Image (cartoon, rainbow, N blue to C red; front, side, top):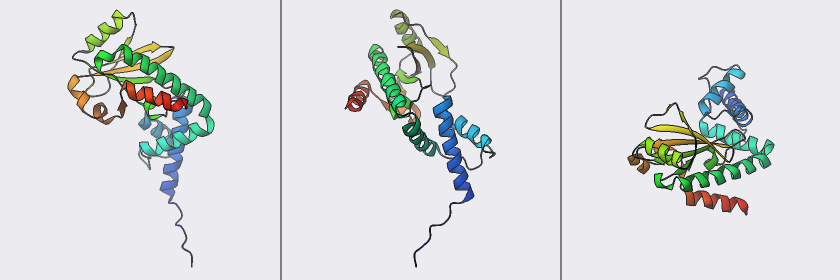
Length: 196
């Protein structure tokens, strides 16, 4: 007698629905924070903020699926533009050991995504002086993450760039607090690979 697959539990069905709704919010409305997207999606589905929330990985899986179905060409072009711009900025700020991180690196960048670059400097003022010496204006952002000396925002090729400045010793830690990251050579490789 063949075995039947057990029916999914109501909580796993809700969890998947929340993941799909969160992915849609991230793709269409530009919500960049997984936690915010999950909570908003849960509320829209009538669930509590902590009830059956999916993991970030589950939301990312749904986000990739959403983008491949509804934004494939747009997302591919945006990802190329973000990575090309990141490479230019990284070359300009090479003295500060730049790394690309975030959605432009992991491939989930959408129409509202910014280029996220981590720099490592003795002082955030050194980075600010370098930007000013190249005639690049920027804004200082409120710092919401522990361990970051400063966050700077600027426009480059009409794309938003978010720069996080860390102390030099933090460079040894994987991705500055566990984030994935890539040097300029790896970004150039990603661009070449996508062009094939």
